Image 1 (cartoon, rainbow, N blue to C red):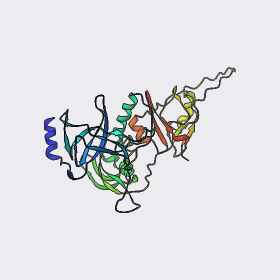
Image 2 (tube, helix red, strand yellow):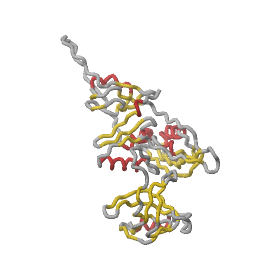
Image 3 (cartoon, rainbow, N blue to C red):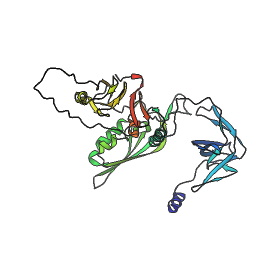
Image 4 (cartoon, rainbow, N blue to C red):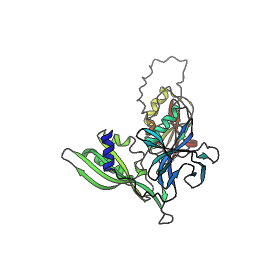
Length: 353
């Protein structure tokens, strides 16, 4: 790893706008627990100097105080080893001990900020393994007010780089353009590969990178993005997503009932599965949501029939991973995470009309 670290020191610029004379300011990105010292607040110091015995105030996103305490210990990292220090300054990544929660009791409704879909998926997988049950809404880009223009909003813009085969470029460019993407450069080579760079709102990439892009390029392409800047809000983005198939009863899904329902769309759940009212079991082939009953049993009659029953043929369900569900779920839908299974559901039985 030494050559990699040396390369980073040479080519990656150091943190900018660091000032040790300004008041202490630190962004906490992680909270750890230690059985000996208690809670450790891990983050990067943006300005100022922190010493042992200083009094700290913890503030939320609205600037309200949620914690207060005297610094008891300060830990920094030296390679993979954690070392204790008496004072730290701007630019350092440290762990602070001593801040206690002074806010109200924890709520059942939480909001996680500054987190990508992959990081959110890893966190939810860890919570699921520890036995937690959660209902998670769709990820959203952080939109902030413009400090220079009252009433104007700013949203994060990503620089998206696409490397695909030339025959699939049209479909990909069309979908990215619909999602408010603006072309920056477009290059082709003699081997039939296309490299395109576009500026696109972060909202436009949510839902497209989770699987739709792979289907459009048939696995022959890559898409990457990096934050560029906050720019003017681009308005509503129509992703063109169809409706969903919603359960109208609770029970067990039966193959007999699923045969005629396959024409309604793509199923996420197969037969012989226990389901409940309001659960999303598939993707509709139409823009509107459909309520289905796949739990209907075949009626048995005491009349002998010479006509044999048709063989039941079902398409395999399209099971989605947790990360794919997070980018697929809509504003009125939830991802239900619990030990052993992950499901989609509508909020309060709402339906897209």
